Length: 191
Image (tube, rainbow, N blue to C red; front, side, top):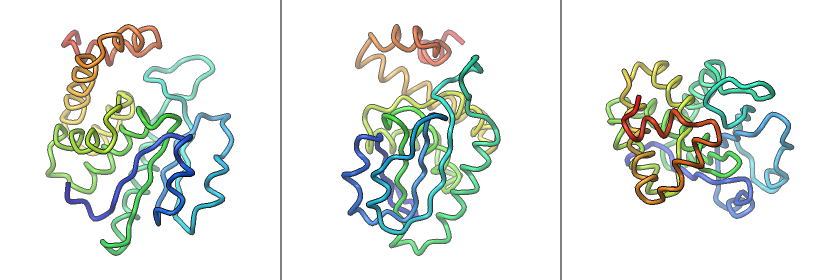
């Protein structure tokens, strides 16, 4: 991966371990009612975008689903990364566990920075950074449309679901039970 910025992906519980990492940009994705993590008080100066929505892939009562407005903010934030000197930019992306919302958002930022890079290669890059990823399909779908990727990122996300289910078949039942059956269907070619 030849990005003009370094990348770290993590969950909330891991934030304190990155305070000395010279992070210049933070994409913080939190549930709507979640408090701002205290760890940020120990970070140096950085540019930060905080997005607040739940880790859902369908609109649900009592949940805030990721929407086009969130993706617009995310992509505008990505533009600011290109303004940093190449040797200095370091992006930290986190959500609650560093698995779903963060990996999907990271894929969009890489796709924006490297529009010629295939979706499969983008997710392979993220998988090397964070092996437990399971990208939020709604974020990927909205971002794929916004970036004019014609389904490339969506198909690549399905490949990640397929890989992860192959590693742990129990994930299929867990994600179906959690209201994310469309992701499992995409992995199994049922869509």
